[in-house]
Image (cartoon, rainbow over all chains, first blue to last red; front, side, top):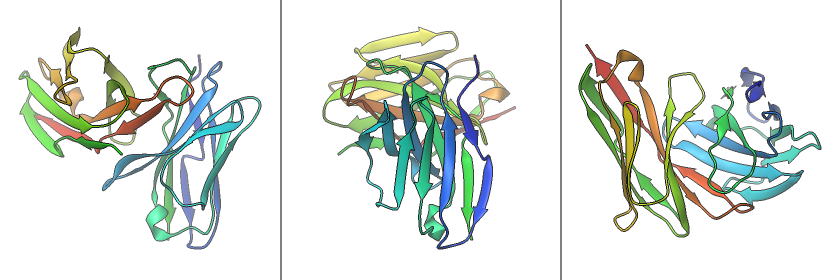
Length: 113
Length: 112
């Protein structure tokens, strides 16, 4: 069974640009969550999608958005990039049962110059 | 809101035992997870506690005290490959409103 797949693995952008990251969950998993990981702040929750609907949202500005498709694949978008957006963006999927563990992808390392 | 604290870094010797502590403050507590993350890799699930007590799984054990808002991860017979970051994560809410909040992680270095 394939794991969670994130593309691209690495990305370099400049300030002001926008970026789209992609996540394919494990087959059969309907919940997809996104996290931002930085050395100073650790893993911070961005948002969670289930059945194409955003169910939960963290404390990030509106420049961060996402969506989920009918096949459960998800994308997140960051507009008007800032230097502080440089981070590892991790996607995690789950079947959507109570108290279940998350399966993480290897992440997209975004560098904003 | 939630507050999760764990030590930033720890060093231990190969073959020894190390305990990584995690304290938390949260409403709607619904379980505590430990994840392991090697540098440059995805976090992977280690353990889950929802009731008080000790859960043992091979060389790794995890303990929870809900009244104290406290958990620890115990690693026995340390191996060099155990050098990694260990993330404590607190769950709240149920299915449909489930949210997992992570601590900043404890970087463990195992030395010969």
